Length: 165
Image 1 (tube, rainbow, N blue to C red):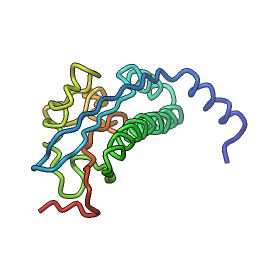
Image 2: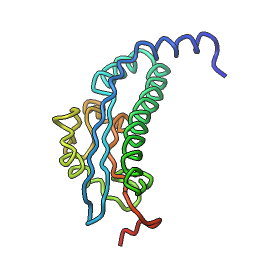
Image 3: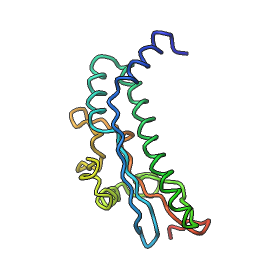
């Protein structure tokens, strides 16, 4: 359990965190199937703030990572909820979302997702040459903070099955 001083510091960091939630969605086809692409970020200012914290306090940097994870997940949940409502109004359902790079999904499909979403122009999310999502890659340290930006398709179906064959 965190001490009262640690709890106070966490509240202070949460209050000062420069979280700027942005998200974009589109409905499209992927391999002939209806999907919804989602991309969310909490912005480059958060990454810059987190890097400054890391210089002075590993504990603050760790807690800021947790704040970022929670904030971007909230962005994604809100995007998904809006899409779910839209899809269900059509008598269809939205299956669970997933990300490129997980399971047998190639990380390279991130390019297509960001292009279809027009994410670089609309919310400032781009890819590095190594397919890391920006604004969440610290090239100086070579560290990933991909949890701050997520791009993923969510299948839309009338059936209970999503068959990738």
